[in-house]
Image 1: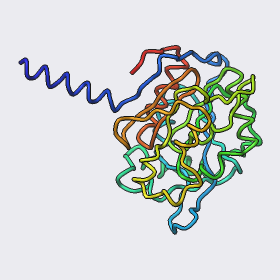
Image 2 (image 1 turned 180 degrees about the horizontal axis):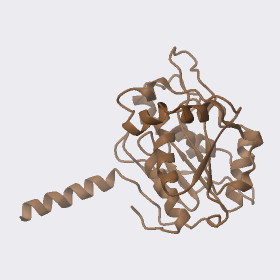
Image 3 (image 1 turned 30 degrees about the vertical axis):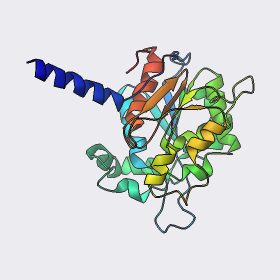
Image 4 (image 1 turned 90 degrees about the vertical axis):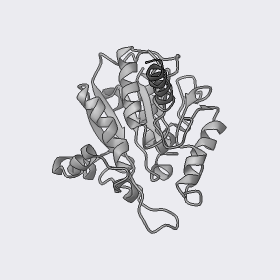
Length: 267
């Protein structure tokens, strides 16, 4: 009995190390009662500098997030830098990454229509949203940073009391965002995102325009990552919620729901 208890306790500790880490500095969003819409940002970029396969949205970084928030009663609006069609990262559609729910979404004509008809970010009214969520896929490394319309929308949502969230390479959407005092919103904050070692392990070192982890650190973020690469890890700091990799969107969604509800218990 003692051995069984010890083994169970050890498994709990190990499992906790690979699950969501929520920083104690969390604060409920002031937008909770205002609306129940979440703005989801997707990439329009599909090409690598020299690879022949295509990049684009990492599909489960969308579906694992939206499944959680929509089940909680929130509606989602899909937008992208240019609007219109969103390409899908070829590798994200492989058997290793797709689950039953993602396959069902992909087979849905209504879902595919949403991916083909995203709202241009320039047409978005940020006052209608309590949360912005940046999905990933390598494509975002090209069309999320240095986009003035995307920056305007994200900064407005954050500065009106909303939540800025992102996963994997989508954390690139947080670069250069500023608060009402003109300070970078990630400076001094606990942030995660696709790590340098994960970039190396994925074989994309020569393809990306920059290493996300390095760029986050250069803008003053307190970069954090999980013990093991490619395991779920998310972190909350105030109204910033970020996830490390393709294994983390569900954890990001759950953390966003926790901030909206004022539930600041670390998991």
